[in-house]
Image (tube, rainbow, N blue to C red):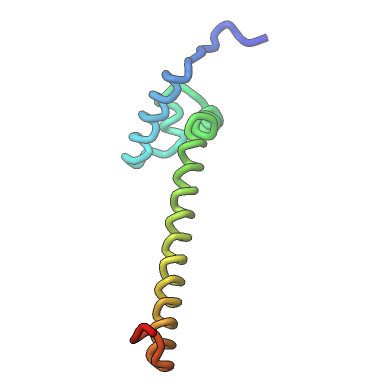
Length: 98
């Protein structure tokens, strides 16, 4: 059974506290001080971040990975186009239509 002094917050209230936590962290406050100021434990803060911001963090990581792959593919296409141009120059093909 849970203690009667426990405070339950709805998801919107938790997200608001997480925004405040992010602002405090950006200002250079350590996690234990942020948790104390919010009236929660360090582990609660970490659990909230994982639960309520995990999707956002996962999407950010996916976007970064897709950007990296896009850069890699663009370099490959550029390299292949360059090789094709050189081949055409050497063989003399592609200049005139038969």
